[in-house]
Image 1 (cartoon, rainbow, N blue to C red):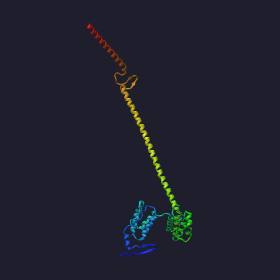
Image 2: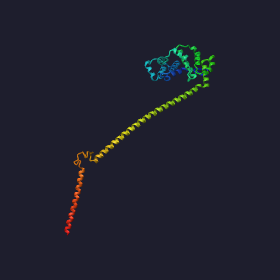
Image 3: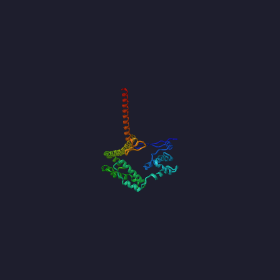
Image 4: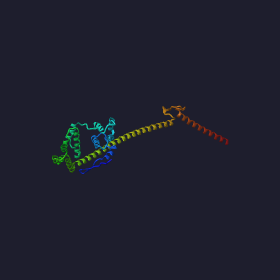
Length: 317
């Protein structure tokens, strides 16, 4: 097979036409598209359409690339699509579910009422306006031939800075194209640097907000720790009281048992002791009798000793 290669010069760029061999190599593999999770469908759709129009890939390869790019809940749409459907049919089905739902009138209204926010650069503002204009063209609300004039008008009138608007007035009122007007405003923006200053302020504000969020989390954590410590202290105090009550009860029981042992196992009541002791109530009289018996016994011993001594003396005489 003959390889057909052709080089073209376009301004400062070298463009190489795709050869037959290149087409064969590319058509035998599945291309890759960025993941799609349900947002920014128009951007993903444009990439798939451009891939189809290049003619480098077979239809089934583009269709499979679109299927592979679906992530999360968006893959459920595959349940409603036949496996044999072409890439164009697949993109049409996805457009019904994820495409722009605004009406043409609503898109035109958004285009003519577009303003540049303080945090948006001139370049981002121009891209947003071009996207709105293209959507209006696709809906048939605006003619493509009016593109340059409409974009110039809305771009210049939507500036949020009067200084930037004054600097770009000459370019706007002249016959310059929209691209030249955009480059002029970008240059003025870079020299005045209002966006950078705003960006720094936003960064500082965001940093401050982040610190406040961290501080709030720390305060909440401290409150939680304080509550846990309070509950723990309360439980310890209750445990201490229960232990003291237990010790007091234990000491009282020991004292009762000691008193019972000292008093014969029972408490005194009414001058006598209850129980199964045979000599209940006779302790005092028993002691008196014991003392009397001891005295009598001692006296008897003395008498006996004296009688023996007298007998011995009588024998000696």
